[in-house]
Image (cartoon, rainbow, N blue to C red):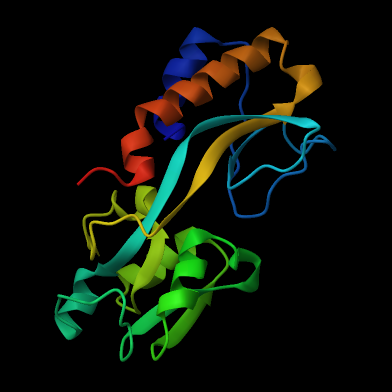
Length: 193
């Protein structure tokens, strides 16, 4: 979402240089690994400012190639006999992992992922069903959402150190990030159907 608007941001603020990194490992804001972070989930550190921007929804998806082998409808409450893509232990608390834990009895875990991009790639290959963020799967036309429901969600927050929030360049980036996330809130929440 951010990369597609970088040119416009740079035109408006040519003196601000942004470095965009992503991954499931949270950067350490207190030790200067980044100035701002978009965090998924509850932010429990009260030394940081956390501004909730929206909620990220999760649902159950399969690729068209998986559905050719296992035609829909698939009962999301009875995954026995299906292949599923599981989660590495560092993602055990995300909504999709908790949902699979509760509903995946009798299913075969064919692969465990540590990053959501790996989950999308595995799901696209037809490896199995995936409980994943709507914002990732909905943008991929080869993925099919199997249920209209949001199976879990967590907050999406912009997080930064209190002392840098007053700096003009940081305020500009805060406005940029807030606008981009709010413009994509329906997709992020999964409420697009």
